Image (cartoon, rainbow, N blue to C red; front, side, top):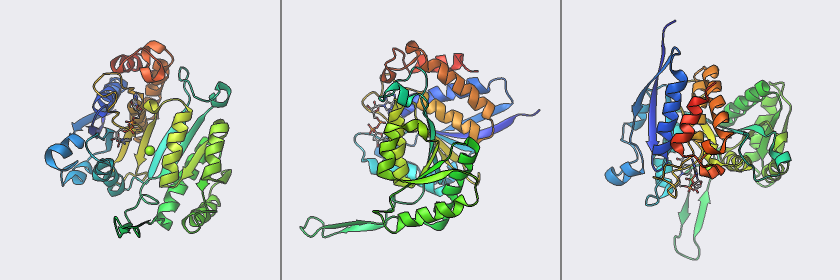
Length: 353
Ligand code: NAI
Ligand code: MG
């Protein structure tokens, strides 16, 4: 058969983003070598470095240029001398919104060789996915401040929940739950947040009628407690932008390291490119020391290949990931290993299924 070629936009970003991204690309190259799958790569220097040099995280036509690609791989952005809202609102959020990447998908799994801060018997069987709404909700710029600096100062921030926005992410979560088979949990807080959360709950209940999936609603506070006390009981969890953000970090911590956590920003219809990135940031505290854990970026790359329709290649990458994690010499120091970024990457390549 002929070659299938994908155009991949790569944005390494800042700090360890520039260390883990090449690692992920070398795993991608090894996993696709000898297959009829091929990636042509274009790299962009969009970052806080660029912001400091030229006043913007990306060029004005940045989104138009990215729109030409089949997928986007991002390392991390952020620098100590640039306010975090600049990197977030100057690059990540415009990409997520312009390309209607309304699903933020974060799988969470405990691997052999990774120690959970929970008792082993509680964490052993954790295998869940957070489906976070990624384009609206609590992360809005609607609102403002009045009387700044005075005793009467006021700050107001509005949440934006639309029927279209909630329905599409909830449907995605129900479909995923129906494939995975262990049920859906919806995060809410309709006892305290009395307009948007009952609206969310109502749409979840409506969409549930269309899917054969066991589901329940949990208030976000109780859900956080249950995820610490019994995380293995959960499979697919769907939440608003804010709740999904919090649940993602909580569940990543439950399985041991931010350094391995992957994420996908999906435009499920494929109208626009989807973006794949590790959950972690630019980690200025360890940048430049060649010890950054590349697994979050590598796993994100496996999610990309899976999203593009090649689950068998994604599986091979994940076999390599599991192999490298199982041995201290091929784990980075954040997982009490003695390896470095390059050694871990080589171990993943050597262990490809
Ligand atoms: P961070 O994720 O960069 O680091 C938190 C801690 O985890 C640090 O101690 C770091 O050394 C460690 N860590 C993170 N990734 C690691 C890896 N791959 N291997 C080993 N250790 C790892 O979060 P932090 O420190 O809050 O933020 C640093 C910068 O990154 C900020 O400017 C922030 O805005 C940005 N950031 C960017 C994100 C993105 O690009 N999507 C996401 C989160 C933060
Ligand atoms: Mg977060």
